[in-house]
Image 1 (cartoon, one colour):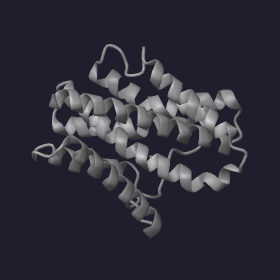
Image 2: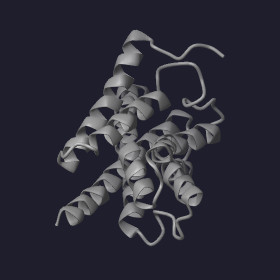
Image 3: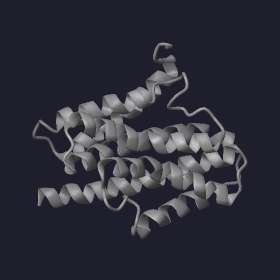
Image 4: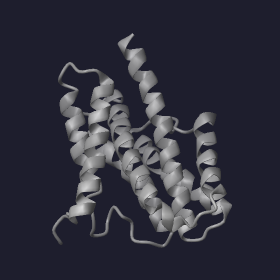
Length: 206
C-alpha cells in the first residue's frame, strides 16, 4: 500500500513538474519572440530534456515520456496557456522565476527517486536528480542562443538542487511520510533560489 501511494505521488509530481517546466519553456520562447512552434519545442525540451538524459544515462529502455499521452498534453496545454496571454512577457518574469524554482524542486526529488529505483547509490542518484532538474533548462537556453543559467555567474541554481536533493536523501533514512520528504525538498530548493536572488549569493569565480 505504501509503495502504491509513493508511485501515485511520483506520477503526480511528474505531471505537475512537466506542466510547470512547460510554462517556463514557453515563457522563455515568448521572451525571445518565437512563434507557437518554437514555444512547443522549448516547452518540450525544458520539460523533458533532463529526464530524457537521466534515463539514457541509467539505461532505462523507454525514456520517461514515451507512450505518456497525458504528459504530452500537459506540454501543449502549458504552451497554449502562455501564448493566449496578451500581457507583455516582462510582467511575468517573477512568475517564470517561481515556476522554474518549484519545477527544480519537484524534478530533483523525482530524478533521485527514479535513480534509486534503478539501483543507483545515493551519490549518483543525487547527480541524476540535479541533471533531471536542470539540463532541460540548459538545453532550452542554448536553443535561445543564451548562456545557460546553469553555467553563468548568478544566483545559486544547480547548487540549490544539490542541497535540496541531499536533504531529501537524508530524510529518506528517517521514517517520515514520503510527501513530507518531497515538501521539504521543494521548500529548500525554492528557498535557496529566492534567498540567493535577493542577497545576490553566488559561487566564487573559477
